[in-house]
Image (tube, rainbow, N blue to C red):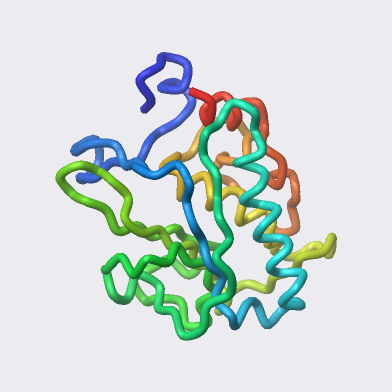
Length: 195
């Protein structure tokens, strides 16, 4: 939880240890770079995919109260998500995985995987992996898995947020195929970000 009572009631924060142990995860630098795997999402046009991802990052950094900014560093060829290497490679990557790892739940639409300093909790690398094996994706209003909607939620995790019990919030745990309401941050998300 955050240091403030309000946010502590509304959000869980990720920790460097197991469960409630270890320091909270945090970014030392408030300018967080990200890259997109050049393969993009074969279900949709690469330009539409990129635009949807950038809009999702903008939904978090556009809040007047925050000092967090994201820098798009372009498309990257041949990147491996940190799940396979367990090392910080200098790229906070957005990537579709067409062979969803056996040790991950196939019903997960996406996962944000971290590499961090166990002693301090500083995040060194965070990759957002989208499940391309079991889910179909779109950057339009068609009722399948909306890239911008899912990315906005996963970016909250990238920032260190857990879930909230507010069903209107971007960081609410439940997800319905085709929904787009998580694209825009709710008041609960904004309060957590500001605090």
